[in-house]
Length: 269
Image 1 (tube, rainbow, N blue to C red):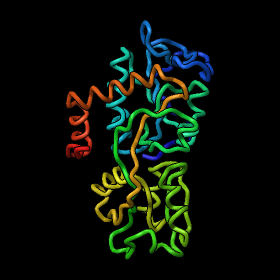
Image 2 (spheres, rainbow, N blue to C red):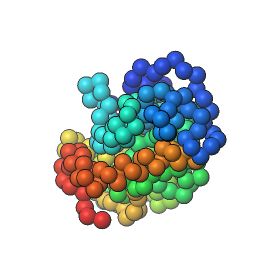
Image 3 (cartoon, rainbow, N blue to C red):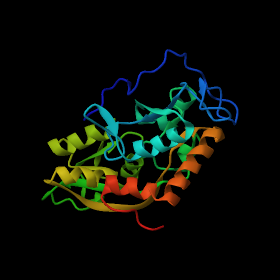
Image 4 (spheres, rainbow, N blue to C red):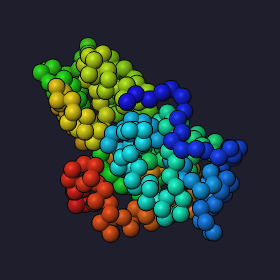
């Protein structure tokens, strides 16, 4: 599924004015509290999650519903707060720049997002919840086995991602073609518009399960970890997120969700 360029909201949003949430360490001046003493939320009774679709198996649409690994983890956080998760599909740059939090569009972002120093300047991250690395995908028999073999060829990358950064730093001889989302990138790989694509290993391995004419030919040891993002200074919500992630790991719920979406239990840390 390719994403429309306009915003899509996966639930009925109350007709509330957007409130800037740029001050205070207690969750800001959002539109509604998640119960007495809980974090304030931008929409009453909702934990609003900004993400970028599709990013299978982390978040993607199936039969009119957004599902995936990240979605189930955020459901646990919403349950803890006594609210429902609401998902907003939005360009990734607005998430990692902090703009979507500062404008009151969302409370949290679970979007297969790597924790890095640049993003930490704009948003606060939860504890890491998933290990990832960059990988290269191409058509079987292409003769391409590494990013160093792309001189004079076209390499697809997703806008504002660590894969895009890695491509610009390491694929000096390639023409890097930038795509707004993963769906557009993989369509370009499949159609031959680009010779190869770079993105996180989890989504690429999931894609080649169905697209058997293509293969992941290389992983790059980038040592990345995903975190959920919140507005800078929103410690009230961040504390709940970290508490839920820790509880899910200790109870075995995290392992259950992981195995459901990846077919295996996570490696022991």
